[in-house]
Image (cartoon, rainbow, N blue to C red; front, side, top):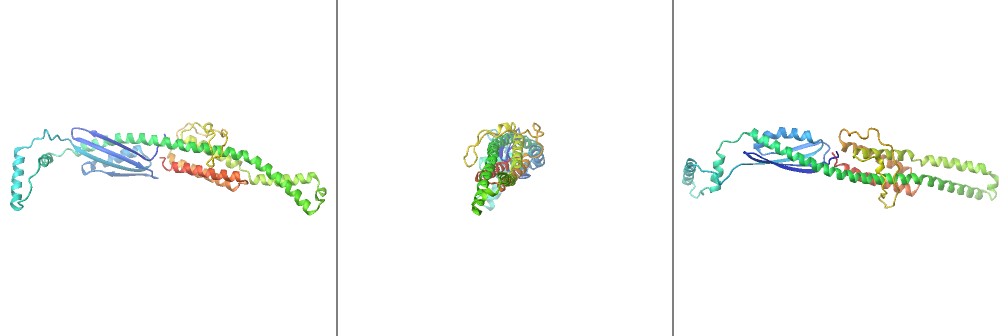
Length: 332
């Protein structure tokens, strides 16, 4: 399942002791970086929390905030006579030195009485904190998966645009070769006529055709992008496999390139070896490597460009690949 590294989850656990609230925020990071902000009464839960988070998350900067509230009902809180007597005596001694010392309010008296009670077992608070964090992690993971699916859909959308551009370039190569042959034949004739008005009569048609064929062959080798296009198709297929797509049959949907020129549906490519099996390791890192390879093929395509159409296609490819790479930065 594709998961984003940006999400939020919160949960609250209650018991007779009181309640613990845990909030977990995550943003993208190359590694798992956990930061805990816990009150002193919950410090015992730090190790279990780190272990719990490590079992659920693999990458991302994680910030955990926890707070607690003790159970207390002021309506039922009884103030003992001894406690009130001691408080009055202490207030009298204080006023002997500081006459304007104010008397405590009722809420302060109740709070002081509850603080004087025996403190609860810290391990009980730790267990309550772990329970709340487990619920928060479930909500966090659901949000991460929902956001991850959205990012995957955006990347698959770009992949369809890449596949359409690949097919367009594949259809342009034969036309470019035919145009070059025509230009070459015209240039040879013009050169011979410029050298001698009877230049064409001094060379046979077979020799002229052989020369044109030789030059065209060299040109076709120079602009041959079949290998680059084949690799791009393979990369698209692998991309769909990683993102949980249904294979390259879903790539061609008549999407448009970034320049707005309509393109035809992409041809089917072979399903990558191992498709159907769950990808191991960090999908985000695998995607990053895949986009590096796709960008390399786009650069090679641009360097071999022999026409403005192929040059524009190479630029469009790089734009789409960069869009996908930016989205992949947030994939776990």
